[in-house]
Image 1 (cartoon, rainbow, N blue to C red):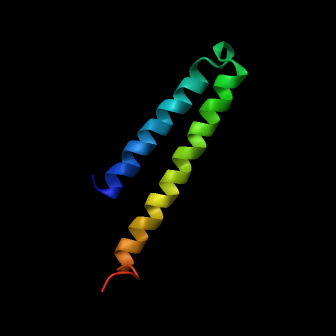
Image 2: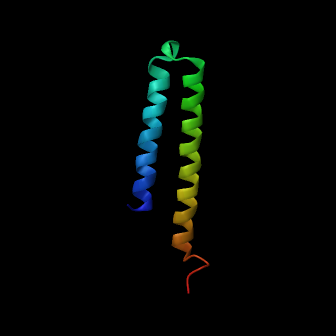
Length: 65
């Protein structure tokens, strides 16, 4: 899978998570809300990591010879 596809998939998953949290917030327990928030943060960190990897690829990467 290309890195840009991974970001697209991650964003779709993040949108799904946020949709759950906003559709029925009164039915979610505090633990579920915390888990959704942690999941969203994890996806954002993965997106940052992938973005940095894409930038490194575009710049040619330091480790390549």
